[in-house]
Length: 376
Image (cartoon, rainbow, N blue to C red):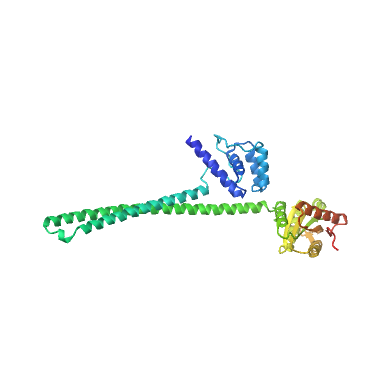
């Protein structure tokens, strides 16, 4: 029974740690999801949480609510007893064995430090009482009362006994204080190690979040990050920004003719150019396939159009070269659709307008920038 209780505590602590690391709200429902995923009590849930982790969506409330509806259609009920078999590791951590959470270590160290301070106060109080008793003994040995050899002998014996007693007590108290000091030093080392581990965990989590928001091929922010930034711009106080959707013309033909390796080189080349052009004005994203997105803040539409035209001309004048053979592979061009956000509209409507402008650019011959609505 005691072993089972310990396992339940270990699962609970591990589930809590993983929930907090995701940044999701620590609600009972979210905690229950992690508890069941960590303990393996619901078939398919650990794998589903692993998929969320791979998609970088563990901290999103909507995704977690979908998990709750999918695996607990009747609502999350009281947690059942953990299975006898050792639980499978949850998606984000790979512990070889259950260990106390960093938070529980901090609480325990704090409690132990309080106990040590209380014990030290008791030791000092004992020392103070011993010294007070010794002072009273000395005060009782008045010279006027030592007037015979017998009384002198008695006074010397009493003084010797009390002195030995104080020395013995001081030695014992000193040993206790040294033991408490050693315990405090050990707690400090444990807390320092825990703090270092927390720092590493936070660094790993930051790296994981960056990786989840980054396109591996072009190193640009990906579609997921684009949608987050778009929502943030819509919620901002002025909501003043422009969206550009740009597409490499005839990219499939280029891939078919020169191969995907060269196609990837073109995607990286275009991505680097876009990022460099807008780094002080906004951000470039890999929207999907050969399509890119630009979010430009606080700039009037005509100036953004001029920027897009400069980018289009720059791409069109560059010749693609096979870096291995130095063989020229021709030129590529971009088509782009541009629009400005309107206060109060949704992200879908802004994307839809930019997408229509991009298709208009394609239909009108490619290698051009179309604005929706058109500039005066």
